[in-house]
Image 1 (spheres, rainbow, N blue to C red):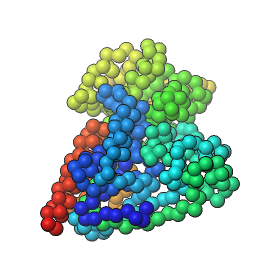
Image 2: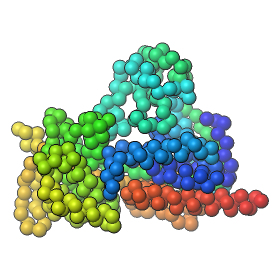
Image 3: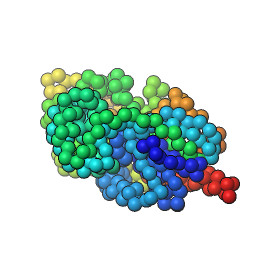
Image 4: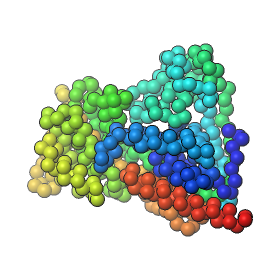
Length: 428
């Protein structure tokens, strides 16, 4: 890694999700030298964890495959995974960026045969599946992971498990002596595409996410539907693995609330509308979805999803901010308690499963980083001239759906290209 070369005409893209990949590819395909870094072992970000996109309800693997093909084919683009920014100094057109590269303990010889995983027995919570299942101490993050290389969990380094993994590899791909490295690059522009993370549902105490097993989050529900996910594509209750056919979706779980996230996360309403189609997909007319909402914010093309959902007899809308969730100990059912704001009727209604449409927040707290960026009260980067040659892309700039995140990334790529073009022109 220490031989990575960059100049003041290089663009650094931080974050390898859909926004980072888009920005990097757009710039590289315009002939610019681009380095794309990602803190996780593979590219893809949150989008790779989705079951379907909205509004077309197609699977994200198609878009992922296209982007990966473009990435592999472009000589102007270099990818560094397990890499984070630790420091940035300098100014527009001349930044010095210090990167920390964590060891994968697996080198380029890896063929992704899986022998190392078969050889170990230790298991850990699977981050890709939000801890809903376990993964081995030697693992491939997910089936479309790029680079297609296994990772050795640092928790087994120095144990017999690591030695078993090394002994099982026929290709001399496992290097247990790998160390963390520090790399310093000179770049002309930086695109921050660090994405988002789900709001911590544990903080919403009235909704008892930490106390009632059959209360889950929208991102966990998304992983359930994936055939390669924790439940093999079935909607199963965590408490007893029984099918959940009567499901409640609670909107604004952590959003638009002065106690949690003040902002509207924009995607939550549409995500629940989309997920109600999953219930119909799985159970037909036997499945029931009830959406508790303050108001439905489905604009532009997403309005059609709302119209279709309202016409679906299996979907019910209740205008109400749910007060709290309690547990029916006999059945394991979560019980939603509150008052609807149209008829002002009190309700205490049990469901097989409750899905919290959790809000979006920036995955990085830029106020704690030693980077001179303008950040708004919600923690998102403001694209202002005060940032010099640094630009935000996708959900680093605001809570956005995939389509708008890609548009934002393209715009940021164009801005970064202008910066390095100016440097090239000045240097003649």
